Length: 484
Image (cartoon, rainbow, N blue to C red; front, side, top):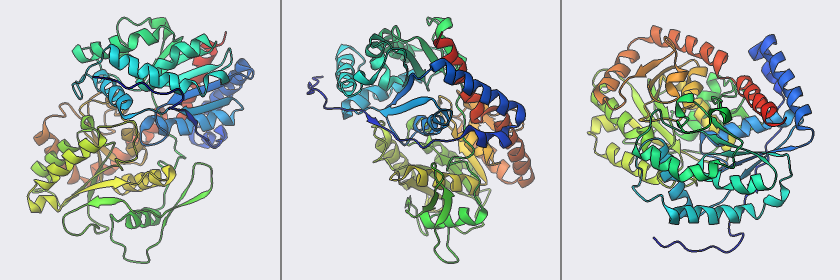
């Protein structure tokens, strides 16, 4: 492979403006004791930083869990008076092909089968150096830099040389090693020497050779007030799904309403792109199964489709919606369009009767708050939510569905197993067993009382374990450890 050299500053970071959020809004939800702990942690952190800046670097501002989480956490931390910034790096197609390869191999699969050698390392470093030219002179000694996922890790040495305390946040991983994980870690390991700490979502993802004293485990969280998770009236759910084209509109074509991240009123105006055989819009009372995720082979949308076709169609009058972002808007995932095309081909090969019960939905990403409101409405309208990933870093779509009081069927892989406790959802021991998945889904759809009870327990479980105050306190503890 021959890699073209880039002119200086061909790629530049851009800063994302995140609205301030007050941690006080969490108080009534989490209770007096938890809110008191959060407030004290925020005060200690602000004093400890003493004017230093916390920088976050990621590879995209929209289209994935990392971007969604940063949009929330940065806002809350800004609300405590800490100077925190979020910057997104740029890259070319080759850069994101290489980093997607690393992503897949950290999950233990080969991905596109390409190399991870000196030429790939050189390309990543050149793109990284170009991004650094626009920001390195802003980093001050004593600042904290949080680098999110493999795309940003090559920044570590330059940031450390500028006097920053560098933390790498790895949002992905696999329990146990194989040849692919070993190859990915060998590629990344030289950059880790410059990091003061590494954060993982699960302890099981930490490689055995890593210095345990520099490791922190911080599970992700949901924000109950974000456009994706905020309360939404049944009327606005129906309006939203009618506006995007999924549900029949029996009345006026009104836009669904929601509250934006900055607190201003929002309206769902855009339509989704829906692949369907026959009528695109469903009747309001049609039982709906939903999986929402990126178009990624590891999310196994095609497997969900096949399992549904094998067992559900002949037993239960239910429909399936496979939902993901517009593949044109997720810049750091070059395999998205291929995964969607494969799913589309599998859908097209179904018998007509089955095909009429399945819809492929791609949501516009022009407005990230509007997109999140669409997902909120879809999850709230669903009878059952599925997350049948083959491997998963954490899979926060599970907690999002549980927060909405929904029964969730998901694979016992990665962080999903940490989210679903007994009685709060159903875990699939073998996500590759499609007939078993289909029978499990069909059986649950026939037991509405169990669905309701499971959903109630699921919401309470998320409130106790996966709301943002827990996440923020763990970050505060990390900063207290870093800044001595």
